Image 1: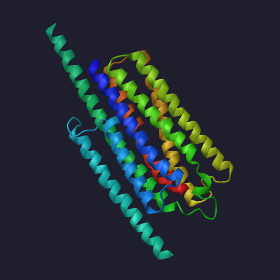
Image 2 (image 1 turned 90 degrees about the horizontal axis):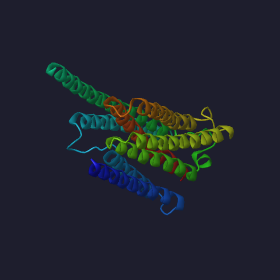
Image 3 (image 1 turned 180 degrees about the horizontal axis):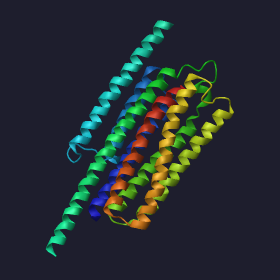
Image 4 (image 1 turned 180 degrees about the vertical axis):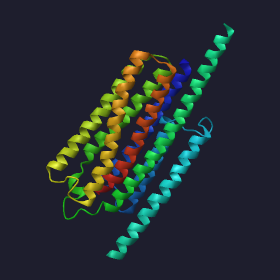
Length: 101
Length: 201
């Protein structure tokens, strides 16, 4: 019992440190103006995606072995829905925006 | 006598199964909530440049303030994790202490957000000013509302741990509340990456 709780504490701390690093990188870039143009957006996006994964793994304890398959299925389903709806809306609206210029 | 003990076993087994089903149901709810937030993000991105000659994101956002909010929410996620650990170790007192810390951090986040909203509205940048601000207040406000309900949930769970102790249903509720709390932190990653950081560039 004691051992497993110790391991859990280190899991949360690892996740926390990773999250702090992945938050600090985009904030520092934008604050310091170290990069400009599309590269900044790319770094922000990559850091955000990795941080979401860090939260899912270290805080929500998702993993491919112990998490029930249904939960992973629904996560995947939501990801597909979000991709279609958000991607589709942005595609249409940005295209419309260009044509209205 | 043996009948009674097997009945109790069966009941306990059924209870554990029904709690598992609730956890799955809660997960499904979280995924639908993620879809809602994703669509609010999409509307924000579409409207973010439509400031109707009013204040733009560059005039309004303060990155230091956002960094503070991020730190509070991330820390409260960590302390809720410690509450979960104390729960699996069966230390009810510790659970209550960590839950109180998480709630205070969550309330600190809400206070910072309300100060930000109040300052914006006082400066004439309310939700009715432009499409950009309507989308901003809807997205960030929906997240703030979730955090408010999460804080109320933590309050309720502190009461349940104190009154009922760490029984099986209380543990299950705490785990579900933890899922909700960590999920809100994930949504906040999206908010500072999509709203605040690109907003000040």
